[in-house]
Length: 207
Image (cartoon, rainbow, N blue to C red; front, side, top):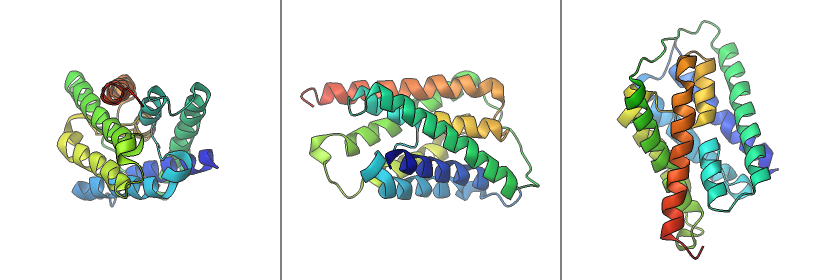
């Protein structure tokens, strides 16, 4: 069931991204609230089954924490990217008269912004969900969702605030971001996950 849960969480997250960012009737400045909230509740719902990653960068970070096998990492990635693509299909159908304005950004600034806040997201996930000191806490979902919320408001205009390769694929398919920019998201997001795993592993060497 863990792959079903991972699919559902990623699907709801990407659907929320698409529905709140695409016009008409986009959520405007409230979109980060909806997206962060969707992630939080999906993490609470599925964390006990799949870990509630919903993000290939998070799965990579968890793999580097040795909490996920290499085979599981690839399976999680397949599920996450597939869920994102299907969520895009639903978004396009539900918003059949969508108006799209691709974000324009400076590649280096976007790369830095995506790296920093993907690092922050993975750092929070690892600290609230994979270390013994915070085991069985009751706030992990809100901590993770609020990290995305903060990042979206902080650097949304600079990078589009994906912090997630599956979401990056989704916004590219929706033409919210130009395809020529997808490498920025993929590399910056995965590097952010690696950096977060390194910091947490050094901080908790016995785990």
